[in-house]
Image (spheres, rainbow, N blue to C red):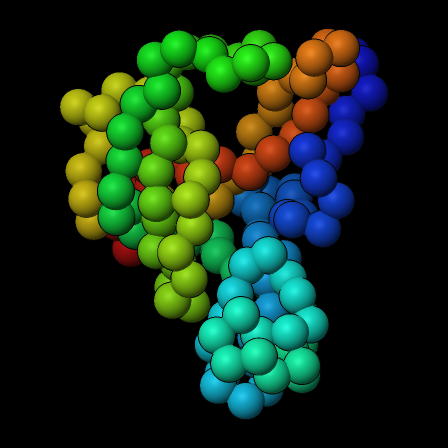
Length: 136
């Protein structure tokens, strides 16, 4: 098995139980969460944000299927792409594990998971995606 690396450091962590957490932050002033993690709040410009893990549960808000591979992409096509509302109130644009739009619906429960892809040189890359989840 080839070495694996995250698509980008500081975006997410693998919980080791089949789920993941996005590495976000919460503002000390307006109390809103944001992703990715940053010290300055994108909503009110307060410079007192603290680290906060986000997810893993959310609801699908919007979705589509990507039918042709983007440059350098070596994964399965089609794949889903959508917007997920997390319980913390953050909307995340992300890859979906389901590529058939007929199997997706607005309001569907979603779970943040780690996906394995490959970059241009064939190195295994870990990224996050959302998978359909059971209600509850």
